[in-house]
Length: 316
Image (tube, rainbow, N blue to C red; front, side, top):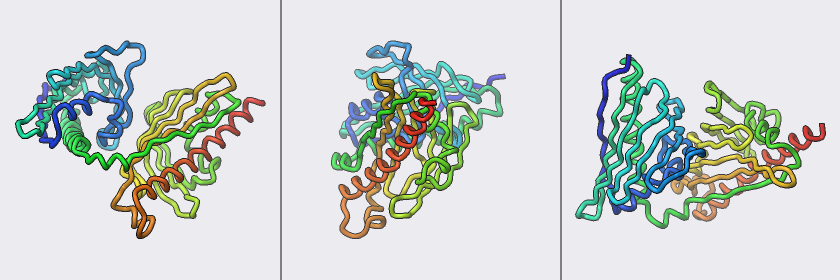
């Protein structure tokens, strides 16, 4: 029997114009970079997006789990308001809706309120939802504040890039190679150890010990969302020392000559660890280049191994 209806409000004051804060809330494509719980967001493809109405699918952490749901959002830029309602919820959630309200203050700051209204599938699940909503709401509001107040100079800490390899093979074989990460220690020399789980089809947890060119190793943990034969997106939640954020995606796009297999990365440099890792006198550009080179080296090694795998299979 569904539980009672619960209404909760969380709020935070942000030292940024209300319009700036609203744009961050409205732009769901950037949420994995802004909000720690968000792993991936995409617009539902078969519905045409309107200026004020949109349907999105969200994958986000709730405790140690990744949950996914589909929501309808109503955007009101004039009123600095975004309403949302889950169309397809994941148990123990029976129903969930809410509102982002951004209020401009006379000081030039903003007051952000995040409202939730929800029911659980049963009374036992209500406590779990209470804790998840409270934890994620606080995390999201803190992250929203930090992102909105970010010094423009902080843009130098962010880097996005993509590597692409042309393959005379099938997207299915390339996808399978990346999807089957539990086999990477046998297939990729830079991967020492993998701990891989997929309790829900399409939602993966990948922990990996990776060896760098200098012989050092580091451990990462990522949540991955898979879209068979097309792409795999991920967000690292356990990061190397030089990064505070790392998201990425593997994509497989058919071309006239075969398939373009790509690896895209977005990362943010951890400034406090630059000299600890790279030594005295090193700078932010040095760290960006170091991380980019390390990520690109491993991505290209994986893409080229996938290329050999796919092309070998295509030849029978």
